[in-house]
Each structure stands twice: as structure tokens, then as C-alpha cells.
Amino acid sequence: MSSVQLATVATTFALVFVGELPDKTAIAGLVLGTRYRWWWAFAGIAAAFLTHVVIAVTAGSLLGLLPERVLQVVVGLVFLAGAVLVWREGNEDEDDEEDEEEAAVTAAEGGAAAIGFWKVAALSYGVIFLAEWGDITQILTANLAARYRDPLSVGLGATLGLWGVGLLSVVGGKALLRVLPMTWIARTAALVMTVLGVVDLVRAARG
Image (cartoon, rainbow, N blue to C red):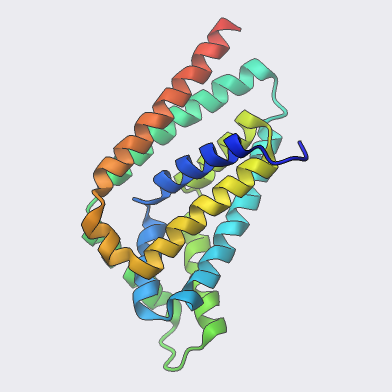
């Protein structure tokens, strides 16, 4: 599909944004944003997210080559599994996650005393790129690309969703954690994914 479908972009954006908020990569962005200039850190974070979106959309497009009924079953099951993972992730202790991500950032720094834009961007890229592998939003993006068979719209929506969370985390992560109850955000995302999973499985059962 060559044209962008705004409904698909909006749906993907909403699901990925909400799914990424309680995630460990958002905590990593918070840590990076408190240590360095926010736009230095965001440059690397944005590039890492874009890389993962390209990978996920490519995988989802290949998954979309499956027969329709098989695809619906696979997509439905992945949505349900993702709902469980998001629910569990939202119940994890945020302070413990922040400590873990701070330790990861410290380890990646290599103890350098002077650090400039390119080093901060590269550090941020590396931390997020590694943390995002196998992440629920990466799986969710691949699933949506397979479901809608529209890699351009899904890729755009996922990228904007991830960039939005990344920007929030590096600019106002501490304030965000005080205002938004991450547990309820995770539960909302899990509920939406459960509904989508059930819908796809029902469609597959009906043939």
C-alpha cells in the first residue's frame, strides 16, 4: 500500500505509545535525560527506535504473507501474549527498574570523563537498541504490520509513538512518573491488546 492510512497511523500510535510508557526503555530514557543534554540523548534514542521499527515492520510484512486464517490465529495469540507481558511489566517496581537502567547506562559509559554530542548520541542509541530487542512494542509493531498489511502507516505510527515516549522520558520523565499511574496505563494497554487478540481469534474461528 503506497498511501498513508491515517486511521492505521493513529491506532498504531496509540497502542505503541501506551505500550511503551511503562517499559524499561522509557526508564532508560529518563536516566539518560537526567545525565546529559536532553536533545543529545534524544537524538540517539530516536535513531534506535527508528531502527527497531524498520526491523519490526519488515518482520511483520513477512508474517503477513501467511494464509489469512493462519495469520489471524498467529496475530491473535501474539496480542494475547503481549497483553500478559504488558500487564506484568506495569506491576514491576519503577524504582528498581530505574536503578537497573542507571547501572546499564553507567556500564556503557566506560568511565569517560569528557563526553560530547556524538558520544552521548551513540551511548543512547546503544542502550535503547539493546534494551528494545524482543520488547513488547517491537513485537506489537510487527503484529500490527501483519494485521493491517500496511507497513508504511504502521511504521509511521509506531515511530511517532516511540519518539513521543522517548521525548517525554528525557524531558520530563520524573514529573511524568509522579503524575501518571504506570500500573493503570499498562492495564489499559493490556486490555486493548486482549480485545484485539480475541477479535482476531474469533475471525479466524468463523473462517
